Amino acid sequence: MRDADRAAFRCGHVAIVGRPSVGKSTLMNALVGERISITSKKPQTTRHRIVGIATGPGAQAVYVDTPGFQTRHRSVLNDRLNRIAREALADVDVVVVVLDATRLTPADEAVVRLLPPTATAIAAVNKIDLVADKATLLPRLARIAELFAFAAIVPVSAEKGTQLAHLAQEIAARLPVSPALYPADDLTDRDERFLAAELVREKIFRLLGDEVPYATTTAVEAFTVDAGVRRIGIVVYVAKASQRAIVLGEGGSRMKAIATQARLDMERLFGGKVYLEIFVRVQRGWAATDTSLARFGY
Image (cartoon, rainbow, N blue to C red; front, top):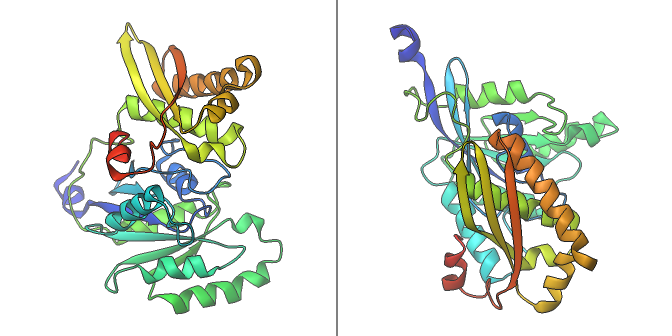
C-alpha cells in the first residue's frame, strides 16, 4: 500500500442495532460477504455480540451485530441480550439502525431513543423489496428523518443486495482515518468452535416450532482438526424433557435433519470435511439466572 493510500485509509467499529426481525444479521452477512451471523424468520435469533469484518480498497468496517432490543417481554435472558445490545453502542464510530421499510413501530422508535445524542447514526431502511407501492415509502422515510439527526438514510434490501454498496460507502465515509485492525482476509473475530455451535442453533430455529428454539442453547463439547478433517461434538441443552423429545423428533428424524443441514454449512464455511455429532441434554433453568447464562457465554 502506498504511503498516500495508507494515510487516507479508514477503519472503525460499526454497531448494527434494531428491534427483532428487521434483518440485522442478514444485513451484516451481506455487507461482509459471508454468513457469519445466524439468521431465521423468528425474532431474537441472535443472542451474542457477533463481529463481521469487511475490508475494501480504502476502508475496513468492523461490524458488530447485536441481539434485537426486546422492549415487551422481560426475562433474565432478554435483559442480558438488551445489555449486550446497549454495550455495543459504546465505543463505536458509527451506528447503523436497521428499520423495516414495510412498517415503523413503537419498538423501532424506542430503539432510536436509546441512541446517544452525539452518535453518528445511519438509518438502513431494509426490505424495500417487500414494499409494493414505493410511494408509501416516502412518508415513512420522512418520519424516520424526524426521529433522529441521521447522517444518512439509505433504503436497502439485504436479501436482494439492493443499495448495499451505497450503504457501505456512507458507512466508510464516516469512519475515522486509521490503519486496519484486522488482516484483509479476516471475516470475523469468532473462532470455528463458536461458529459451529451457532450453525446448529440456527437449524433449531429454522426447523422447530415457535416456542422450543427459545428454550435451547448449544455448546461445543469436542472439536479436533486432523489433516483438514474436523470432528465436532455439540450439545443442545433444553429446559425440559418434553422439549428434548421435540428436538429429537420421531426416531431422531428432526435431529438428523438439523445435523445434516448444519454439517453442510460447516463444510462450506470451513472449507473441509466435517464429522458432526449432536447430543441433546436437559439442563433445567439454564436461562434462569445470570450465573447459568454466563456458563453458556451470555
